[in-house]
Image: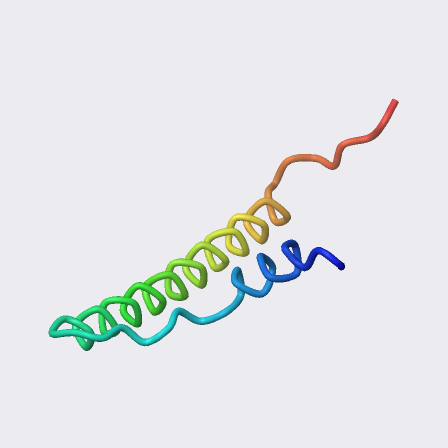
Length: 68
């Protein structure tokens, strides 16, 4: 019999969490959605900062470096 443990573990990593039940289920769902949104916004902000730094680094007035 084959061992499917690694496959099951990988599937669990990328599976969306199951819907919660109980009085705080909607509150938890809203919290998770907010966390995902903030994470996306932070990722976009960090990307913009890196791009800006890269552009500013390319347009510096320093002479080009030569390898000796």
